[in-house]
Image (tube, rainbow over all chains, first blue to last red; front, side):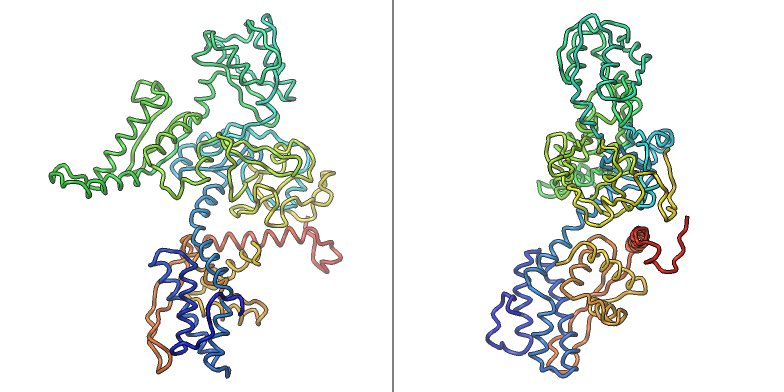
Amino acid sequence: MSRLKIQRAEPEAGPSGSVASWLGVLEGLLGLPPEESRAIREELASHLQERVRDLTVTGKSESEAIQAAISELGDAAELARRYQQARGRSTRSTIMQIALVSAVAVALTAGGFAMRGASEARQQAAAARERELMAKVSAYKAVTAAALAKGAGQPEAPSENLLAGSVVFEMEDVAGTLVSVTPTQTWGDLMQQVAQATKRTLVANAASMNSSGLAPGANVGMELHEMPLAEALRLLQEHTDASRDPLEYRASGSVIEFASRSHFDRREVETRTYDLGVLAQALLEKEAEGPAPREEDRHTRITAEETVSEQVTELMQSLVNPEMWQNNGGELGSVRRYGSKLFVTAPKRHFARIEWVLKECGAFEKERAGAEMPANTGRLTVSIDRGTNRLVISDEQGRAVRCDALVVDTPQAVNALLSDGSVEQSVPMLSELPLLQPDFKSRTPLVNLLAPGAKEGEAAPEEAALPSGGK
Amino acid sequence: MLNDQSKDAAELIVLSLLLEGPQYGYAISKQVAARSSGQMRLTPGVLYPLLKGLETQGLVSTSWEEVKAEGSGEGEGRKRKWYRLSAKGRKRLEQRIAAHRAFRAVIDAFISPEHRGDRQVAR
């Protein structure tokens, strides 16, 4: 009781006095809008009333009962903190649900985050591609240690051809590969070199390269010495015919694929939805404040949605790669509207800019604009701090991203992530529960389990009834 | 200090109780004590914020009941907050139960057969 930060010395007028003052202290500590604290106060007062009644029935005096009932609530500051946490959970759970996507919608790379900024509509749009990609991508599902043990063995190749909404997981070792070429070496030589250096199988899409003006047999025409791959590619192509549709790569755990940018774009088209309700509302509010327009000029909810959609669409299509939009005669980009929702279809790599435009328009509500937002812009880098054995997840700007759940795939995929090959590091996950924090200091003992016999690839004692999709 | 596992367990328990019908806070805490034969005490300091969290996440819907004042010394009539499981809450309950079962299965996988007693080992 001494931890309660209230003055209790004087008995106040009536027994309800000390309840009232305790609740007053709590209300102060809660720091919530008046309506909310009133509700909390009301509920707790009602609780205390009943509790006190029950305690007096057992023979306690009223003031004893009150003291006991209040002390059961614990420290007011701690209680206030728990309430605040509980309130804050709305945002967190939204992100958790976003991050924990059901099997069909998500294609994960090894250990990548699945962050979908949109909804069912996008999943449906990608359904057909999902089936194709599922052959390459491991499905997200519940895993038990038994499955872990069963699955131990060859890491399979997670693909970086991600479905809508999932995050590009940059394989760090590939991006950092140092490349050296002489002018008479060919593009084919370069690609082979990279494949060897990164210990991956080379897949070169010669057709797309040829149509973008870059023959695999052509000389690179420049001397480079130990330059990082991305920069090397950029430099080598800057003044060539191919610069309009340059050679790019996508790397997964065991494959590195070279093709033209347009080839990847076509493959990586996705649809995301954005709700412009906030903007429509803002427009209505602004009108309500200002001088009353004529009746016919005034926006209704519906026309406000129309107006903001049109404006945002136009802005987006003029700022983000204008020539790709179908409205502008392009092929891969389009914007459709339903109510206050925009369905934006475009190659994945453009969504960072698209979402920047939307953000600048104020389309994203404040409470979502926190640390979670960067993840939605599409590219997270996951790396491992070997010193602390922690996962470090950072966004494109290098900011650390807090996550509520790390959704990982089969153990094989995690093997690839940790590029370690040892089963000890595999991380099984349960579906739709946040079980893992970025630092791998797990919240449940499921993480970092070493299933007995797993190393030898023995089956575990329990049968795991899990669908094995995407193999 | 609450760890996340006991928070998950508390949520599972509260959601399960609500599956049986709407309840208000104090009744929930009494039921928890009663059904666990006093083994589990969901203290109000934990329960009420938890209920708030459920409400915020849309797992329950809430309504207020006017409770008439009874006799003297009880103060004015109070309002009681009732909780009812929502469809989303039902789904969450199912998930939690599934997770709980999977968790148990995982742990069981480590308990050697001799300690498991006569439990059959399924292959």
